[in-house]
Amino acid sequence: MLAEVSHLLIIGTGGHSNVVQDCCRLLKINSFERLEFFPMLHCISDGSSVPHQAFTRASHFHVAIGDNFYRNLLVDTISFLFPSLRLLTLVHPTAFVSSDAVLHSGAFIGPGSIVNSGAVISTSVLVNTRSVVEHNSYLDAFSSVAPSSTLCGYVYLARRSAIMASCTLAPNVSIGSDSIVGASSLVLTSIPSNSLYYGVPASFRKSLPAFRSL
Image (cartoon, rainbow, N blue to C red; front, side):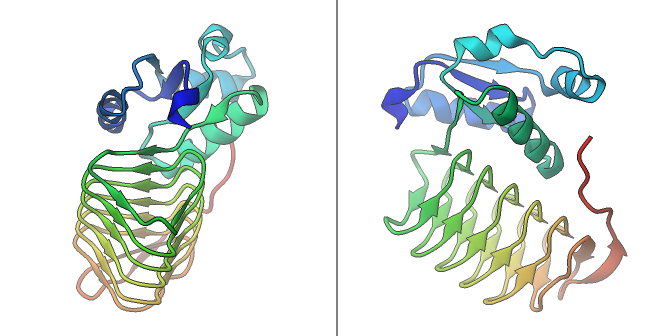
């Protein structure tokens, strides 16, 4: 797959993008460029043209934005406008991914992370530095796991759900779509959609807005 990458377009210029760039260098992807995503959002929201030249140079793209909402929006929009561009999955060389785990397009597996047997990492999911996704867990599209979190076996993350740093999720729990688990939380029971939970054990704090496109 990486041998097919003639030129990679990285969407995003922030901190997560820096980690993605470092991963690309270690993977010997030497031809890449970055594109700021705020001008892209402006073009999308007001209907003006996107910077076609950058996209026509590229064979692949990767959206390196930590915000799940905007990552979802940009992947969907770029895939629609430039259907020949391929969404690239990146696995840091220091990460471990089981041979029978499944990685979908656009996923990012960060330094020192572990994805164990039977886990499914869906489209543009982020598994950040030194996180663990245990066996048979399913991370749905555009969800994210921040550094040093552990998802025990059979955990389910719905679309765009976000697990902040240093959390532990007990086996068999589910996190609803667009929900957030605050940093250093212990999750023992399932969490509904559009909710903020945190604490030890994690408890309900407030409702969150549902996903909507621009």
